[in-house]
Every structure is written in C-alpha cells, then in structure tokens.
Length: 177
Image 1 (cartoon, one colour):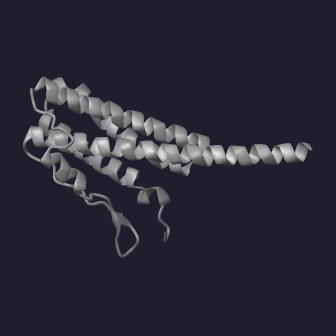
Image 2 (cartoon, helix red, strand yellow):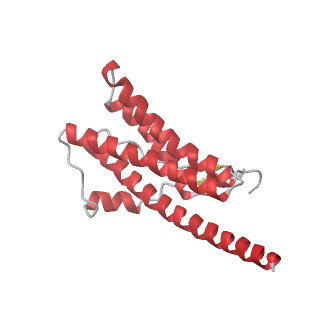
Image 3 (cartoon, one colour):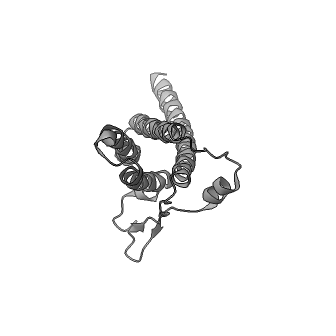
C-alpha cells in the first residue's frame, strides 16, 4: 500500500468521505443563516462521525471494537439520512423511489477513489446539484448505498469474529483435555 492506511481503500470509507464533503456543501448552500446553525452542525457532525468511525474501527486491534465502531458509523449515517428525509418533507420536496431513473443513474455512478501515481487515494465526488430536490435525493441515494455496504461489512466482520471465537474456544478446549 506504499505507506497508505488500508481503510482509505474501503468503499465504505470513500463513500462516507463523499457524503461528509457533500453534506458540508449542502448545509452551506441550503441551510444558511443562524436559525439553521444547530441543524447544520448536527448534520455535518453526523457525516463526520460516519467517516471517522470507519477509520477508527479499521485501526483497532480488537475485531469486536471494529464491529462496534462500524455500527456507530452506520448509526451516524442513518441519523443523517433521517435529517435529509426531514429536509425534503418540510419543504415538500419529492423523495424519489429507488427505481426512479434518476436514482438508478446515481446508483450506477462510481464515485469512489482511485490510487494516484503516488499511491494516494484520490476520491472522485459528484458535484452537488443546485436544485435542492436533486441535491437531497443524491445524498439520500448515497446514504442508502453506504448504509447497505456498512451492513454487509458488519456481517462479514461478525462472521470472521465468530469463526475466530470458535477457533479459540476449540483450541482452549483441546488444551484443557
């Protein structure tokens, strides 16, 4: 990995980075003014937590803590998803169905990073649409994708954990005999 930290190669981390960056842009563009200060802060922090907990979990020595921190990430991104749904509802903006052609277009896009010449991951992110309905639906789509991927990551980590616990337990039982 030429000095790179492995979590940067995780699709969940790359997508969480995009969500965090776009959330900061979204809040600045669509929630300006002091009356939205708390909501902006909450949304940006939820996006940051979603990203940071993936990195922190990956760096843990304990598989159990890794699973816990990935679950915290999923929870933070789930909270952010509800914020975007609230934004749409309160402004009477449509939330597009997952089979809507615009959602299917966004779901097919590959926003994740690619290693540059130096090995550094360069994350390619979409531009935030100027239209609030388009913007909120893009972020809802990205959040749903990442929550799905985090669920799969958690399942794989839990399977690995259970296999390791089973192996350790069997080894312990053999030693007792």
